[in-house]
Length: 562
Image: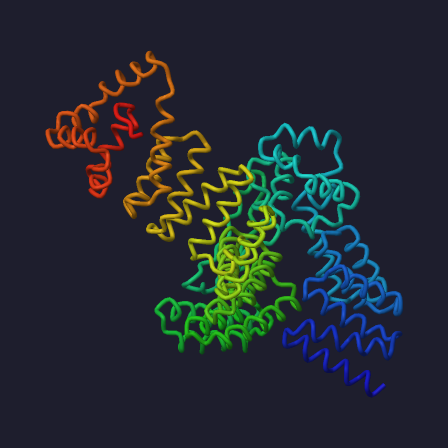
């Protein structure tokens, strides 16, 4: 029993510190020694819930009330988890059962009241919106959801929610589900806004200057509704009135960037009212501005714990998670930042947090890409690809060239090699894409230009192929492969009959640019020289301006090189 008690205390300490996985481990070890201890299951349920593992939290809560049916806290734990899972009718039943054993239990009363308020505010909690006739017809005829039905996973998800609406709370992170709900409920505005109304008003709290966090304004009240009056300061208990005053003084100092003074006022606010998450969050905001990121994280974790205990607005808890994410971002701990942005999203979704999450995911992906780079392994993969290419196994060679590119994405020759494989497999579009990347990385890589020319020939795009071969000749005017490709492109344009040729030349002569070139005495002299001595072409192509004019004449069909 002493060992069980020690493990329980270790679990409690880890839970208080926000180390949820560690707490779960300690409680599990204790349960293995004493499987009939209802308190251990209750504590592990709390740890699972804080870790976002609500199904496991529910299983432990149910085990708690099974072991101790007359213990009110077990029902409070069960009701809370059911509420998180979106199973609000069951949550109401759990709270009401607990009140039978302890009618004056404040936690049970507050939990029951909150769930009933949520049910009254929004039809999502009154029935299953997915269990309606012609569900798929309605979604198919609405442009917002029409394309979703082409995804088998989405259809499977709808069927799951039809059969088990209690899982809706777990699926709200999927923006498709939110859009679907807005269609099913015939709402003009996004269901995100509707759901945000359930979470109440946000506290007056300083914001991080680096990553502002805002929520959509609540919709206007209906005309017949009478707005609920704000409580007057004189109506507040003395401690809350004093705390509010200190917060206001802190906010004034915060806005003036007088953070030490702001911190003093926020700390005094906490002394007056230690149960309000807003003041805890304010302190964390000061630490963030002071670049005390570790302190900021610790303070936010404390704020979240206090918020959970006192059933704070989900938006305030989400804000604390976001600030932890921002602090980890400053510390360049990208994975931790991602984890806490995701936790924030699970509490309350906003476009701002979604953007932050997308940015950090892109950063992680880029870091992983950089960490994967290894020029030595890239060369090894290239050699394997070369061997397979020689054997005619082009598909497998592509895999090795692709791996070489991942290992060293700035090496032009790997793209050229893979383009050669694509060409052999007649995948010209993919080959062309690799050639473009190749010459982008190394514009002087002559092989890339030649390969691009050959691919464009295969795609019947002779004028573009001419340009590619010309680029190669500018780099090396004596390159036989480039010359052969250039001449092949030119000769292929002269297989038409006489009438076609006349039409081509007539169109060319109507081109103002062509007329300008032909009127240029220097160009006329060059053309005569090329006619008498075709070898002069190589010298003239070294001049970019002349080369461009010659190419224009060739593309128009007025001249050809054989």
